[in-house]
Image (spheres, rainbow, N blue to C red):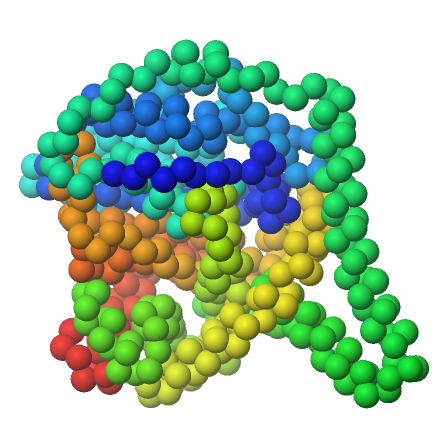
Length: 475
């Protein structure tokens, strides 16, 4: 479907290294997945050839993670000399009747399974026996490989614009693997460690130097005091906003576990787009506002009112369309837990998220430096910090843009794409993907926190209905 090159760095960023390190606690797993439901069973052998071709063209799919001695630098990616395609690409069948509920439960279980950290961090499972003569494809990536937007770019490698395109060529992966150059020498490896560590220290010292420099200029230019204080306050505020908020949120969603539940909902794309426009905001504002109204309604059902709820949304920092890896910054927004007109709530969230987006650029360097420093700490300390910060987040949101038209997967038309975002220590995650006129939303919850996922789904649906009604748009 696409021949655009994808570029990946040879080592993880500090933020990716943080995701890699903290998931020694399985509750903080950053696996991301998707469920593609098709109108017919998939041609397994055809898809296997497409995946083999993608592996040959994208080195990251045949690379594994190699830690750096002493964690003085982020882990690096090196070729997996024992790569096995059939380990990563498999086929299963649902037992009769093959309902959507069975499909979602299976994929939820597959997503929870940890990756073998000595192999490339991805897997695909073709699922047969879906009720109604349908088929499905489950895909899973570790978040250190790429983010949601990068995942869509990878998916283009095995999707087609027509149902029966020309057969893909045979790919000799053994030949591809043998042609890869040997990893760098020990001397180069040591040099890389020194270089990366120096870069991290330079960045941290740069922040300190800028702050001290502002203080030194105060004597010569007193009016600069206000500007300096404002800059430092802005940076600290941005870091706080991205790291976890100011206090506990929901009194209902306190517990955390390794268990997960998953369910879905669909919202018409054009209606949501029109409603967002009439309300004076973006599609993402509509998406987050509906989830927020649903979260408040869930609490109303139990007769509990939280002063506020903590939610995160994603700010994309991607500026290179060919780049792989991750290019996003999660940022927190506080949601008033009381009763509120849906239009007022929409506007409040729109303004709050807009303010956070403006802070991300100013705090980006500080966040990178903090991640670099945190990665030097003992694993138990890092996971403890991550667990503590995530426990203060009630739910996470993310959205991904898919194709506006139908595509085909191994001879079958894809009729639904349900994303599976990581809970990663929060109470629940809702991720949206736009595709062929529908907003497909996947809701993954920690059942220790959200004890009634059916109630949560109904509450979120009602949240979107209220926004449609407020905008005067038929739902």
